[in-house]
Amino acid sequence: MKKFDERFLRQLENLRLAVRKSVRGRKEGERSTSRRGGTSDFVAHREYSPGDDPRSIDWSLYARLGDLFVREFSREESLLLHLVVDSSSSMYIGKGGKHDLALQLAAGLGAVAWAETARVFFRDRFFETLGALLPVLEQAGAKRESPGEALQSVTRGSKESGMVVFLSDLWEDSLRKPLLEASSHGDIVLLHILSPEEVSPSLSGRHRLIDSENGEVVDRQVGPEELEMYQRGLETHCDEWKRWSSDHDIRYLRCISNDDWAEILTRMLREAGLYR
Picture (cartoon, rainbow, N blue to C red):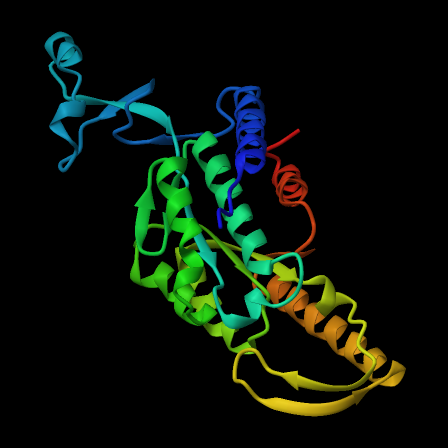
């Protein structure tokens, strides 16, 4: 079944165009930095130093002054976006599709990245176009892997720094170590995706509960008291992730899998100042 239908692709294109318009509307220089060896706007001359690229020498200035000077330019930084999608078993539980929402958000983030002249890295590969990324996202659930393994693709892949966006239900506390390791490759953004059933379960009576990750089975009577205990535990779990993220300069956003992906992404972009 196609995860990216015509309606989704239209929404994606509208968002991409809106972000591109917003980016072009910024004041010139907001995203530019001075960097030696650039190829866009000329900034200044400076004296030649051993090791400088000979191609940057201004030979016409040398002809007039008899001294070597190199030309410096400003150019936009090219952001590298690492997309990491949790494909563990728990991501496929509940209505609304946690994994499907994660893939939609990943596609949206890729489209926005290209509007920002960034590069996209997913599952050990660089992607230059949305057309190349979407088929790979379509097949992302075919191979189940632990979220820790998915995060290792960042550290074993590109050595460049950028932004790492991790889309997961965060049910494994062991993720904290690989997240900190991935932070050496750039800023981390956590998108915590929960299903409606996880946020507000409606169980009643005796039920057989099965842990989706390890297969552990528990028979339990579920009533108002058990549901209240679960709600307190869930809030504690989410608060701990939020607090841990804050302590480690990681951005944290919680959402529900039946939320509209475009609304979630628009909120993220507004908070980041990329969309007005």
